[in-house]
Length: 131
Image (tube, rainbow, N blue to C red; front, top):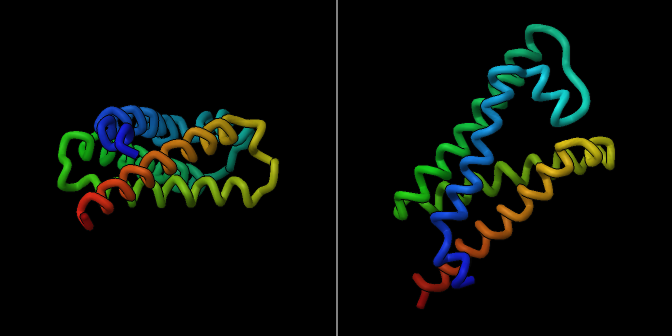
């Protein structure tokens, strides 16, 4: 846990930058869906929802980058980011193996690593505060 705590700034920066790449979904929603899930959604409502999804994910990435430089907000930022990533993982896995062969499978594997690292940091800092 100490190694995670000692490197949390770089962990958050790496995760934040990777997470911000989902701005792609706001710019090119159909292409982002196709590359992530191997499928697309049709219609103007799909465009709105997917673009919004891309912006929200990008905001989580921006929060991670901000939190990397502002220790006071790290617990909140890491908790929100971890919860967001866990929900995405659960939703993809709820579809069985349907999307695991697409980039979504890679994304959930990487997101799972981030969640573990975030949880380790939060546990370490909580232990340090309790001591």
